[in-house]
Image 1 (cartoon, rainbow, N blue to C red):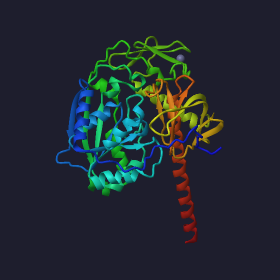
Image 2 (cartoon, rainbow, N blue to C red):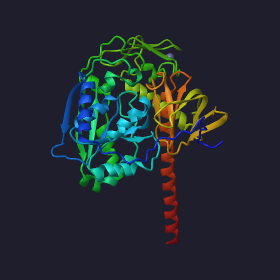
Image 3 (cartoon, helix red, strand yellow):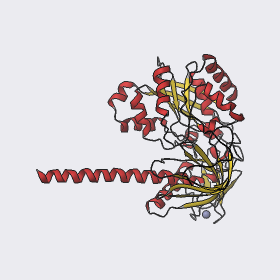
Length: 444
Ligand SMILES: [Zn+2]
């Protein structure tokens, strides 16, 4: 058995990410803008450009990520300039490769999530230095679970430093409130507000350290939809507004039971202790009796995240589940691999094991190098089931979980493990430096 390899029934060519991005025809930018305007009809509230006077491509455009509508709004905002999006590889899936063909034609750069792709830097170089166009990136590389910006990798600072081009931040507001990730199928009546702001000039980038650059990026892309809703008195009065929220808020703050939450209408409750909360029209939670532990939804989510972090720090974290596995080596077809077993721990990272086409297989992503992971509550390409996605250099595995509402916890654990490893690495490096310094001092 070869690690990270699947023996298929026939030869399957993995999707080639080494292709040079295409510079699209001007007419296609216009088509993308017109189609985007049609698709977002009635959804867009306000588009605002800040500090953008006189700015011409090439530049790097960084956006927060809430729903697919972000792509459409960006196409409208950047028109008539040509832009190239680093787009998740599965976004190219559909219609037997036709969608991939079209995305390629409009200049998209396909990328498997949370993997190191040696061709990516050269594609970025083509866009910025050869074509002089806009390079559009969604640095969170996933939709927001709960309306707040997800972690952004330090590596974007190196990319910004390397190319030394102006950086523009696009902050989308309202897309999550209209179609939250935990129930995107039913849209609410919320208008968007998007700002496009130049945040860094080449002179800034030259004098700033990578730490300072990433701090600016994180600060400028930070957004909290539920706070924005309250601050702007945005009423969401759909009677079913809380439905699906239990997928993100999976732990009861009253009895601490995990994966025992449910939701219906405007209510959220725990089947273990019976405690119930209702969601107000301003998106706040209120216990129907007794103390309200968290009225602000992201506070509940962050409390869960802290609990997982503690589990990781104290060595108590371990996850396993039986999963239904689909592979997506190229964008033409999901290949059903059948049942598999998914485990996750600090020591062994994410491991997927199964049996397909007469052979066992084992897919591993070690904890080192895995700073985040893609999870979905209702995966649009398959049966709208929750899933955890494992990407490796030439394949992507979609694992539909069997246990109830576990994907958020696995995501938290991946982030917590990565942060722990990074912290330990920095501490070890410092210890070594201190030891060397002590040695030198003694010699003197
Ligand atoms: Zn409970």
